[in-house]
Each structure stands twice: as structure tokens, then as C-alpha cells.
Length: 404
Image (cartoon, rainbow, N blue to C red; front, side, top):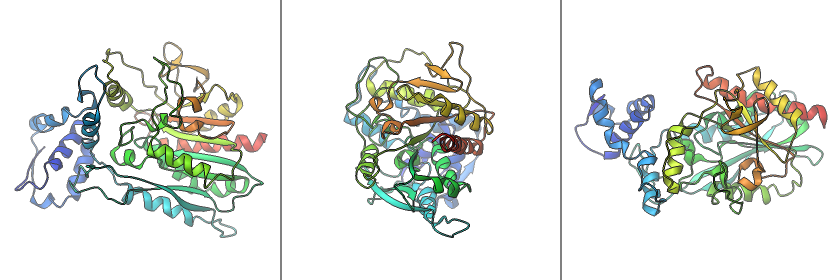
């Protein structure tokens, strides 16, 4: 597709469209184009043989192409990476109003509000972080960070924590957290548990469909920056982030009255871009030369178990609940999933999540896990992925109700 513009408002507009095409997200680019004020001034001609030449400039901005091979990124490389991550959806328009509306959910019988929405922080924008689609300066007010909690919080109830969007690009984590609160059974669980939900921990990553924060750090390795780094291990802690710092502060101060958490479910996805974009990005960022070896992305749902918290019956309950919605990931030829050993069907076991800096290790909950949905499966729709997250939460809570 060639777009002929009678004038140039911002070069980044055409670059954003070309980038989206290169990333096989042409539908996002076209959606932007149709909303753009330039649409009336644009002449669109379909010439498929020319698409490569339009998209060519964006190839240099694939993360693996940033910097010099074998040399860790410096300030300029991080800046280039951030400024070439195009905005593809809007947190303020698409998500924030829906989260705030969760405070209006009421009990069908008593009409009492079930939840309250609190703003626990504000994620700053970063200097020079302009909107890639419009070329306009970023909103200086920053991203408001929201949590949704039981309106009738009681010391007599057990405490449940659910997080979504720690990796902003993992959409079903965000949507699954919201769907859980709106799907109809929220009132049932609110009678038995104090529920705290942070639906979108990383709004910058949500807007740009990115795994990392704006500073190029993996937020799901940033909850224990003092954790031990083990060379060659696939899970290692990274530096603290604004996202993790805000959530930890909220848990310690606003939610400091909670001495014991019973359960923490952190909702995630494993996607094809983990191999095509984010693994190469990490190698480039850390100055590691890519040896060309590719990992195998599991087709299906699986859970990540903390080896210091063996609760096999709980994991079985979640797997069986999810199985009613979508398929469970099989082990690979080596009997593993993402290179990790299985403790049971659909469950991998890793070292203590707190030591690794994972979000699921941020509380003292004895029942804790990270969910992993595979949204790129030909056998699963986006709706199924969202419902799989809800099924996992419900399976987890139903089991706790039966044994506690």
C-alpha cells in the first residue's frame, strides 16, 4: 500500500504505518489511518509489490538491530529503542474508563457496591517520548495506575491478589482480570474473600504492545532488584522499575494492614513474539551475540509453579478448570515447557519467584502462580484466552474454598 500525502506533518506518521506493516500488524496501521485527520488528504493506491520499499526504514529499528553486536546498550541505544516503539492502542481511551467503571459493580440482591477503584500511583512519561502515531508530545500528566479492591474489606476474610498487564503486551492478562470482575461470579467470591486486582500494571507497555518498560527493563523481573543473578539461567532479576516500585509501595502502605495474603495469581501470556522480538531484543540489550538457537513456544495454557510452594492439588484444580475452555500445553520432545521441567501436567517448576524478581513473588501468599496463555494458537481465539484466565482464577478460588 502506498500512501501519497500532499504535505508532511510528521515523518513518524508514515514510519508508524510502515512499522506496523512490517510487524504484521497492518490492521492496526489501517485502523490508525482511518481515524487520522490525514485520511481525507491521502490517496491510497494498492500496489503490493511496493510494500517492502515502504517498510524498509523500520527494519533498522527491530531491537536486534539496535547497537553493536556484543556490546551492551548505552543511553543512546535505550533512547532509540523507546522512541521507535510505536503507540498502537490508547490506555486513556480504551482501558482507563473501563477500569474506573468497575467501581460501579453492585450486588444483584443488596445493590451494594462490590468494589472500589483506587489510584495507587502515576507512571511518568519520559523525556522525548512523543506519540509515534500523531507526533504530538506525550501527555505530561502521566499514566494513572489503578487497583480494584473489595468495598467491604474484612479482617475475617482471606486475602486474594490478582495482577494483569505486568507485561503490557499480554492482552488477556489485562482483559482476563477485568472479565473476572464483570463476569457475574464476582459477588460470590467477594462474599468469601477480600479481593484486590491490579488490571494493568504496565500501561506504557500496554499502549505500545511491548514486554519491557519505557526504560527497557522487564517489569516481571523487577520486583526484587537485589535478587541473585545466575549466569545462564533463563529467569534472572533486573533493576527496579517505576511499575514495580509503585505496586510495592501500594502493598506496603495503602494495603499494609494486610498481614497475610492467601493467594496471588499473576496473569500472563507466552507469545510468538517472545522468540521473534523479545528474545533477540534482550540479547542485543545485554550485548550477547545471538547463537541462532531458537526456543519452542508451547501451544496451549500452562502454569508456572514456585518450587518453594508445592501445592499440587491447587494446580490440578486450575488446570482442570482451564481445560474446559482451552487446551493445555503439552511437553516438548525433551519433556519440558520453555526449557523448564514439569512438576505435573501443564505446570513448570522454577526457583523461588521472589528471588527472581517475579511479580508473583511480591506477597507472602502460600498459593501463588503465574498463568501463561498462548494467544497465537490456531486453536484459541482472543475470547478463549480471556476466558481461560478467568477459568484459572475461578478454579483457584473454588479449590481454596473447598480446603480452607
